[in-house]
Image (spheres, rainbow, N blue to C red):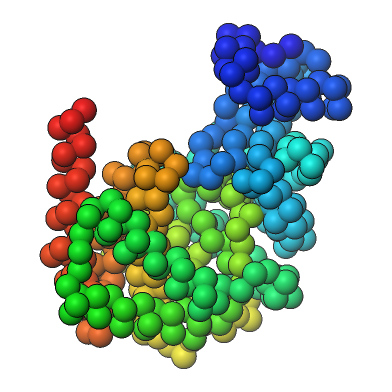
Length: 353
């Protein structure tokens, strides 16, 4: 039986939820069960947790056909299982309807746990170990993934001027400022393509890693995996849009990864300096993209919750640019023109209620 206290009214107005319940009850034979939202998602996917007496909880994914394709999720889930890391297993599927029944990795997300005293080093240590395992064991699998190539890199960075600067901030760059951004994008593409190309999760951060004692971390939201630069997932992990750390700690963790990756047989650059430049500049690429995505989530998808994370994301870019002479002009452009406009926009929204 459905959880009437939380979902009955929603079901009447939600044809997808009605279809999901018909699949669970008619095709899978679920009887007395409770269905509750499990997590938010920046895409059109939704997740619900199912609890039943005498059974372990499970997760059901709702991926509306025409808006989401479960095919990549199924392929990458199989790969991660083969690599020996902890990702949800697919228990049942209806590809045509866009429903998947998955094992449940629990409710303890990395993000709140990282803020607790003494937790960051062991949790990040596990995440580094898993990431090295994915990259080292995923060499062949990575070649079957979509390439994180120049076309995709440039498209992603175009979200920054198109959605953040123009659509969200109404900010027009001068000719000189546009050239600074264009030249930086050229160099960021070259940096990404220069790196060893590996299996890239693409969203390997604190909201997609679950604390799973004995099999840590549990890894979620991997369906957009590509074959791309060595440091991309590392940047996602340590220059996370949702939590910030002092530079010296980030460098220490990044070099911890480099040592582990090299020991696993991965190419990690000629020295620490080259590796850290790769890491910094890959971060700038990601931060430009993410700033654009957060603005697009509001203006296109009606999801304002990510706007408050834009300042932290852009401050990462400013810090990384400041460490590299050839990127200081971009860092100053963001610091002087973009960040003040973002702050003003957030203040206006807060004042408006």
